[in-house]
Image 1 (cartoon, rainbow, N blue to C red):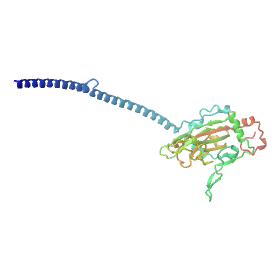
Image 2: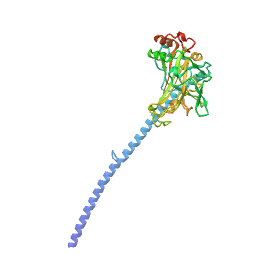
Image 3: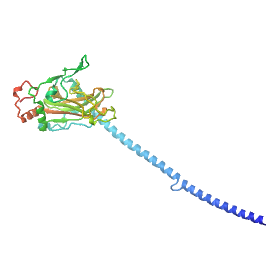
Image 4: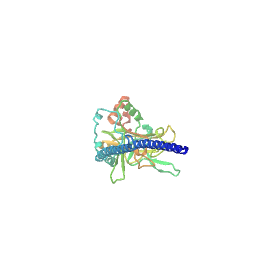
Length: 336
C-alpha cells in the first residue's frame, strides 16, 4: 500500500516537472523567436543594415561622380588655356596712372611655355646691378667653374651685363618709391605641362610697359620649414633663380641656423625686347633637384617681382630732391 502511494506521488511530481519544463521551453522559444523575428530582431536589423549599406553606397557613388565631373571640368578649362596655376597671382601696389589699366595684359593670353620661349629668344641683355649698390643678396656674376682648391669661380655671362650706378643712390630711390606706393608687386608661380613633353614649365610673371627697375626676389626661412613632406628637412635647401631663363644665379648658401635660410635677390634694369614683350619672368629651383617644380618641393617659400617704371623712378628721385645730372652716362638708370 505504501509502495503504491509512493509511486503515485513520484508520478505526480514527474508530471508537474514535465509541465513546468514544457512551459519554460515555450517561454524560451517565444523569446528566441522574438529576438530573431521580432520588430527589432536579428533578421530585421540585418535587413536594415543591408539597406543602409546599399543606400550609403549609392550616396558615395553620387558624390564621387559629382566630384569627378567637377575635376573633369576644371582639367578641361586648364587644358584649353594650357596653364595650371598655383594660388598666387599678380597683386601689389598701384603705381602711376598709366598702371591702373592693367586688368588683362597681353602676356596673360600666352601659355607659360609661350612666355618662356619669348624670354629665351630675347636678344636684349638683362642689366644687373651689383649687390653692393642694390642691397641685394645675389650679384651680377654667376658660377663659371671650380678652381684647383675647390672654390667656386664667378664671372659674367653672355646673356647679362653689369649695370652701373656711380651715384650710389639706387637703393635709396627704390625705397622712396616703395614709400610713395609707386612699386608694383607680383607673386605666384604658374605651371604648365605639355602632353608628350617631359619638360615642366613654371614662371612668375610681371608686366612692364617701359624701361623699368625690377627686383627679382626669393627667400626661404628655416623657421618655416618642418620635417616631413617630399624633401623632409627642417631647414631651407639651396635655391637658385633666373631673371632671363638663360642663366642661374646663386647668391649664397643657406645654413642650418634657425634664424637663417636662403635669400636670393637680383635688381636689374630691364628694357629692349622685354618691354616689347610686355613682361619679365622669374624662375626658381633647388640646385640639388633642378627638375622639380616649386610647389612639388614641399618647402615654404616666398617669391615676388617688384617693378618700378622709369617714369615712377624719376618721381621718386625728385621726391628725394636728388640732382644726379653730373652722373649722366655713368648710371644705367635715369639721372634726371
